Length: 312
Image (cartoon, rainbow, N blue to C red; front, side, top):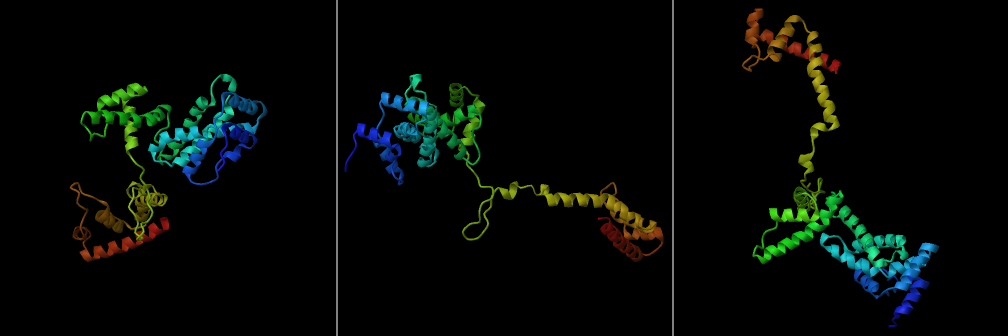
């Protein structure tokens, strides 16, 4: 197999920079290929940067990007602890590298490697914050700083505790919280809040049915407020309307005796919480049998039901 010297590889990169990009394959092949790409000397880097700045030379931009792909791979390895795919971290870092190359000014006296680190990390940070959890755990600048420093500092505290023989403690002590807050220039309450956010996990509100066809139980089952469902609200308002204005209208359709019987039997409550008059009490008032009072009550209820249906 023929290999290219650094000078020959650089010449090839200038002539056709994307010919140096490895073909699609697994991640290990990509990383191996990026490590074989030649580094640029200071003179070459400044030459390509000026061509890009002054003439918008895309081949020069390609040469600058290719020579720093290994830097992206190296930086992305620092963020593998967040459980996100390494390939995605590299991809986002490459986006940051392209932004850095576009904005790089060779006359500032800084090498591209130093300038690009900020852009690469910024793009990876943004990707992690958007994808590490379904719900964002850090939105403000202080929270972002906490997010990316809390874990590493906590690991340091755990290592110190292990040296002292305490290998089981997983939470921060009050002194550790104070130290961390002082070092990061945030409030201790913010440290505790971020630790709580990091220790929690995403919960599916409405889980999919299991393989056996049975529905899985999720928080949606007890978090949903059925009383605020539109249909329930309409029914509740209609029920309230019928129980006030509707009942009044239905009672007005009855004669005096029937109205009093219904009111005494169903609408009045005594001071002790018991119901109104009994059939026998009303029978004594009107000088008829209890059965007759019951018949009048049944007829009055039918008439009220019809009046309520018309009112609704």
